[in-house]
Length: 249
Ligand code: F6R
Image 1 (cartoon, rainbow, N blue to C red):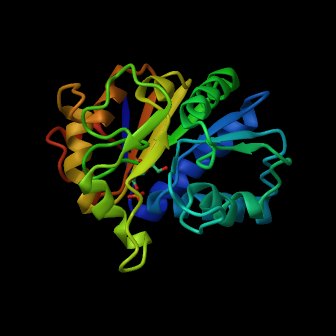
Image 2: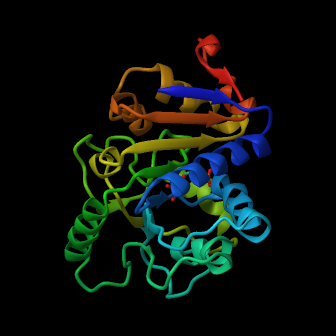
Image 3: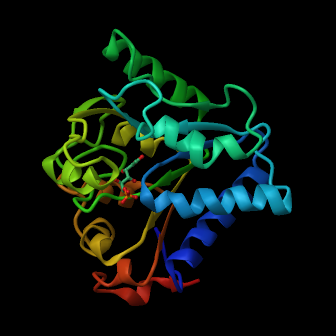
């Protein structure tokens, strides 16, 4: 695992954009795994800027979302599919149908999870972007998620619903359930790239990077993957007890 502490949150986002650009530029048939959430917003903004100003092209790139809320209306602006369209896909040159996610409106959700799991495995994700929850989740694999978990319907923890309440208005509850790729689904990607920014992520980052591999900290499963880069801003690195193992940007 390579741990990089960038000089700032914007430098960290820029570094992630560099790695995405490098992946797209060198892979003959790039399959990119997308995370959503506040952490990814500056990454998406930087990718859109590079598309506009430096001709970074997403033609030929297939992209797969990690997860999606259940129970929101079609087109709800908080739905991750809508977020990706609004912040990234709607501004760059993905081909029609190239951005995919699990369908939260399917009548048979178990069948939809199995279908999406197959689609992601067949796509063979080359680079998977990840954020981390303050409770150590990746995608919506909450503490207790098995290492061999695959795409499934999950119940969100109270911690995650509290953290994500900022995206929802007062009086509008955060959905209780979601579809998420599992830890085994994520581990099948060729390379994992986790970005974490802010002091509120420092504890989860330290437990994921330095703690034991445990289902109580789903992101600790990254330690088992052969190719992982963790990009942090300085506040997110403050929980590391062995910061000398991290490299500067
Ligand atoms: C969302 C996802 C989640 C987020 C995590 C951090 O697709 O995979 O695991 O990455 O909840 O969210 P933010 O970036 O909003 O702190």
